Image (cartoon, rainbow, N blue to C red; front, side):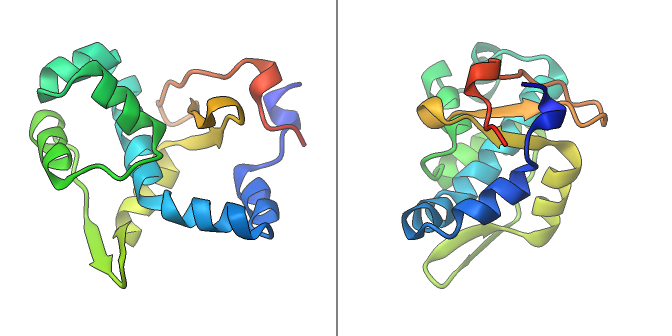
Length: 146
């Protein structure tokens, strides 16, 4: 299946939000997912491996891999290490029992990347949006089909 034959991510999400279990999990992981996308975009844009980024930040490679999976919220300490080593910034809003990236940060994410969740293992895969972000594509059998 060609990438052009796939449904846009926003459409897939909208369809799946009808499922209450999906909606709860999607909302629970929103902040972690947004951080993961920023980290992956930075790493691919700069040509770093997870190991390279780990050395730069003082984190371990498995910690970088967990961060990029986007299924657990990173600690403030982890975010501080990332910002110090990479120059990335995260504008957070903590209210109502949740943590969110600011609207401005989310808009920047949308400009930089297009992310597709791969069903097997819940991993995220970046696609090149034509704005200079180099991504790794999932195998055709792992892509979300239309």
